[in-house]
Amino acid sequence: MSKQLALYGFIRRKDGLTVRPEGVERGRCSLFYSGAEAAAVVSWIKDKNFEPNPHDMLRHEEVIHEIFDKQVILPAKFPKIISVESLERSMEEMEDDLRKVLQRIVYKNEYHIRVIMTDPVVPAVEDPPVNQYNTMSKFIMENSSRYKYKHYFPLLTQEAKEAEFVDYAETVVRHISQKLCIETTYWRGKSFQSEKVLLESYFWVRKHKTEIFEKCIQDLKKFYPNLRFSVMGPNPPYNFVQLEFVENL
Image 1 (cartoon, rainbow, N blue to C red):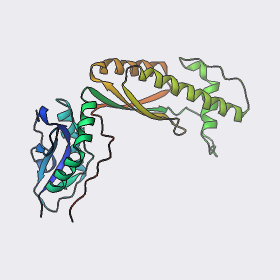
Image 2: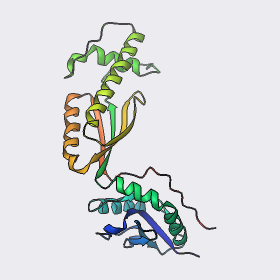
Image 3: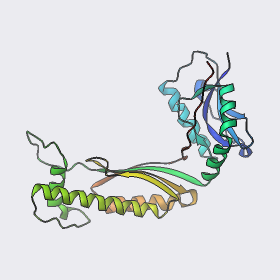
């Protein structure tokens, strides 16, 4: 039976591995070479019956971030336990894709940002409406003067208020996206996903612009006090190339 490896991600071979963190089963990480440009960050699995668990998932993330603090890494999603032969064969097939992706992310960080509507304080009702837009839009429009940004909401019917709220929310999403895109090199997102999540997006930011981007987020938080910005990052950008590892039976 072939030896098994825990795969954490890929780095540029010429960069080497500047740190040697402990990974799954407390094994020291090392590099696995196959192609000419990329190297895999791996640790050896001793237990043939090994099955990933939550603790190992945490170790996986810690390894990625420890390496990311020092150099570029293209993370592999966990769990990824594979054989030596499978990893070698896959790296040879993916060599060109890995090289291109690693080159793109050398100077970039990734941020995952969600903009969430803070639940308004509304009186409890015995039969809450099925569509929460009605309650939320009514509260926000009739109390808009409480917020730093002012927007005129005329006294309309309930249906018209909801339509006005949807239009207003889309305007807010567009404004936030445009502000954040100024300092980014790439972004993708879904806007107005549900009654509470107005924006969910990923931004690639050049590393030397990280502080500027974070300041922009802080400014937006002050400008929209009734929205909650959930920010994850900076993280190493994840690979968007489809990578498939086929095990030998």
